[in-house]
Image (cartoon, rainbow, N blue to C red):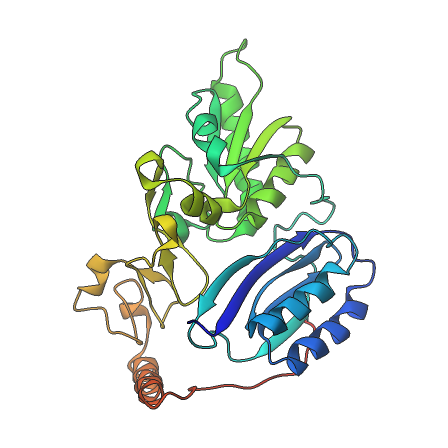
Length: 316
């Protein structure tokens, strides 16, 4: 049986003094042996933590006692080994960076349950937009969704303003009001981006509740409109329907997902580089990476952690 519970969580709420929350939360996590990263900002909390089941329950109880967090519903996974090396509780301007300082993320669009998502995005009058980064879209996406080709979430506002301008110019004068459906991995980015669209004057805006992960977990594969795998920000790299492990690897050189085809390339060296970054890394960098990978494999064979430390919380 897996030993460690991994909890991914976020909540948009109003924290008047995130710094006052940081210390007690970090101290509790460290005292219970919980590791991972939690981000605090005036707009809420976001992060992923792992630890013994009882320890995670204690931390979640502490978070649920914070303002606006009573109904926090984290996503849970299980791991045989601790997936994180240290505990960090950091102060940020935003818990997910969009770069719109006056936006109220607590006023999002309409949630759509995974069971109802297919009907919504199959409507020809609905514009479906993927709010994730370009490399994530390359791993998998919903059929027919618009790919903004953004390298980071903070590029989304400028992209959408231009996209909307071009779209409105091409629409017929008697066309119905714009209706937009958006999605992301776990819900946080599309929740914030729907709040952004509402602030921009788009009245009919929807987002997939629980993100792609809930959809893949709840919608049977024969009925699914998802194509490919879903990139995740942990050691699983990507998952498929039923959240089964995917086929992508993670390049330790550039931190990008590597497809099975690219893994078969002579330019892919496990732990060192992939076809995308092979020519961008110096021989010295590759040599250091190869040595780190060799040490990591040695430690894994011995059943010990390669690196690990519990660090005091700090802002940044």
